[in-house]
Length: 502
Image (tube, rainbow, N blue to C red; front, top):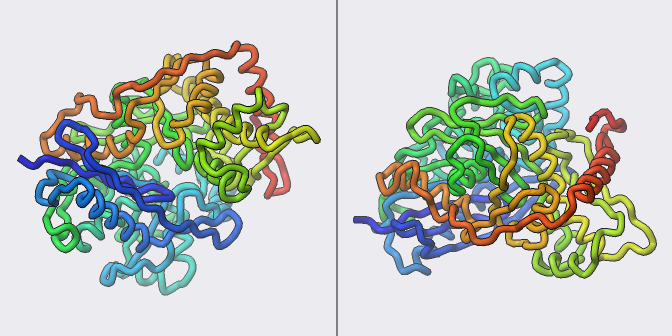
């Protein structure tokens, strides 16, 4: 019997590989960062080849660290930054343009045009999404629009497109398999989440040849095998899910009404809504959570664009702190923010505002403001953004929030988790293993090869610490209102108007 399951966790700033034994215990981790490129304000790019080579390097490194042979790997699960997209040549495998990151706002004008043309109701009905540069469809269109030759080649079947899971599977299989799973497909603004297929009308609207899009497969199931050249063995690729859906699965949120928040580069809240999609009245997203062969499971989602990246900005951009831990320590040297509020709209705002023209804002600064107040305001902004999404989600689902399960690297901040519990007024549960994204990918792969079943609680489910609310509700509500006032001042900055209402 083969002894291990490998999870590839391809994120926005780094590629990680986690090796689990058949009991779900971690036996090895390898991580490698890759470059972020910002060619223009609001633009974010990655080198797709570097993404692939960094991921492969971590796969080899984790095997070496754990002293494990590739022939002992039972299956590979993949989870990935979702809306980021690559377009490449089918024959050579060479990308025709850098990968456009999910954070990138370069397609704001394209999306604004669709909105002005009245396309949002159609797109929302079919995809569960709002029109926003966040999603993959407008990015593919932008790449094809760069040169008429690009679109001609795409129509001839010479170019392929895909989100990062698709790119990795294509590379791992030596260019033999071009697939994506339903959770990633549902983030493109091209996929009908009700009929579970690429939509002809939307492909026509965005002028994207459907033939360049990958085949859509379930989230759990063998889709292909790794080429022997990479690790020396043919290993089944048996699980695929977007990072947030993988975290939802890894957290054990497998029944309707359960909710998690992943604090990573961005901050993403998903609530399992079962086998029926709930269409949001509060501008949240309706998305596919997974399909493990028993039909689709849906979720409500709210995305915060900047969480860990806001802390990274403190470190690298402002040079105020040297690490996330140092940010926590500095924040706790002051009792509060002394009236300072920070809105991290570096690339617009996500749910529930969806304002691509919002600008990053720090307000309430006085002569007495210190670096500690600013750092604390940045950390608190992550919790305020999450609170707004939770409020919208609870309203849409008609369910009372009883607890929030958390994961992701930024959830290691006990200061932030306690403040989140204070704002929400409910318990915040942090698991022993905060890497539930990788755990979810491994669980989906394990399920496909019979190592586990759909009800098996994975390593992401064991609670490590519970944060109980310690703030009076009146104080929390007052702070929330002040936050909303600050958000309102950030809206519409780059459009010259403030036309988004809270």
